[in-house]
Image (cartoon, rainbow, N blue to C red; front, side, top):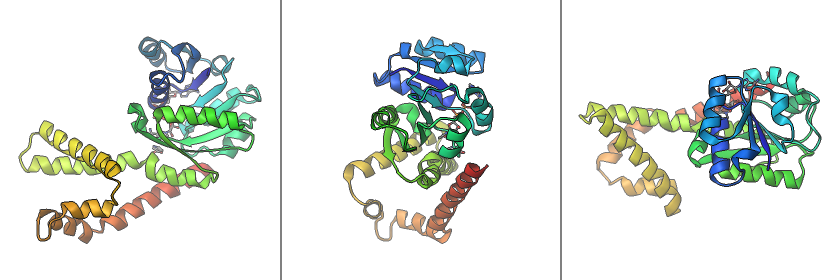
Length: 267
Ligand SMILES: NC(=O)C1=CN([C@@H]2O[C@H](COP(=O)(O)OP(=O)(O)OC[C@H]3O[C@@H](n4cnc5c(N)ncnc54)[C@H](O)[C@@H]3O)[C@@H](O)[C@H]2O)C=CC1
Ligand SMILES: O=C(O)[C@@H]1CCC=N1
């Protein structure tokens, strides 16, 4: 599969790294268009791929064109690529808030897939939710699925509004967990652990809890109850979280992210 990346930043690098590592695509079939010269040099030296500063150059001969630039650069990118894509080329966009209609209209192209990935894709533990325009063929959907599977798990949805929901849960979600972990690290340090020790304690507890939750197959509430001895320490902490309205706050925060995603989609 010949693939062109437009934008070789954090996410672009995570995806191309996963494609190479999982043998979905050899480095020789990957071209990255990137405006920053130092990023081009870095990507060439690290992954052995081709790079170019020109978007029209990058998409030549590509079966898949993956858009991994920031939302504010989309108008400029669309203007440069408008009408230049062949009907058979599949466009996959990971740009937050860029709707199928905005992408399709801006590029004058019908075969478009829209994805909301997340940053754990950097280590093959990503979560992607995606949707496609009707012009995307079953074979192209398989291509999209194989690219996204290289980064972790993927879920297809026929409803584009679910992309806003996915943005609020899995797209932004890693930041919520990091925020919670930062707070727990601060608590650990206040209790006398060194910063290094606090990081190990919190990271191992977070990773262990996530993997245990998945592997045990038990409901989260049951797993929580198993830790919470009656009259014990956990119960005291959970009482404080409940009094502070943790659940309401988390739902409110996710809804704020959802609303912002909808708003970005209209802009
Ligand atoms: N970071 C995250 O958690 C997530 C990000 N996204 C989306 O992924 C996209 C990329 O995000 P990052 O990789 O974090 O951004 P980034 O800023 O690291 O990478 C974007 C790259 O595109 C390059 N670029 C800008 N304009 C260009 C153009 N016209 N032609 C070629 N290259 C150009 C920039 O020099 C930069 O290296 C964004 O649209 C974001 O909404 C989606 C899900 C999660
Ligand atoms: O914060 C953002 O807008 C992007 C979308 C999901 C994660 N980062």
